[in-house]
Length: 127
Image (cartoon, rainbow, N blue to C red; front, side):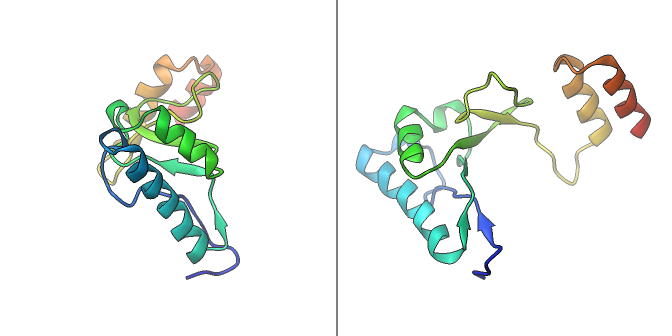
């Protein structure tokens, strides 16, 4: 599993809300997630995925601990497009699964994202 080109992103071992953990447990969870990947893979991706990923599932303590582990950003499960003004530890994302209608999703996400008209037209031609 640990080839020289393998990388991975940490994910808390306890698949729950970091806000519900005391400081010591939260620190252990984050450190353990990062250390497991460092032990197994050649490189640690500097992006963290919050379990559940809703606003109630992470807090300033988690962000501080992640930063101390060398993590530079975190993705949430809060729906929306990321943008340059967004806090790096609260990145929104567009949920996509095998059941997702990509054309509809792209249209709905780009309609409010401020994407220039020409680019919108090109995207519409793809679908």
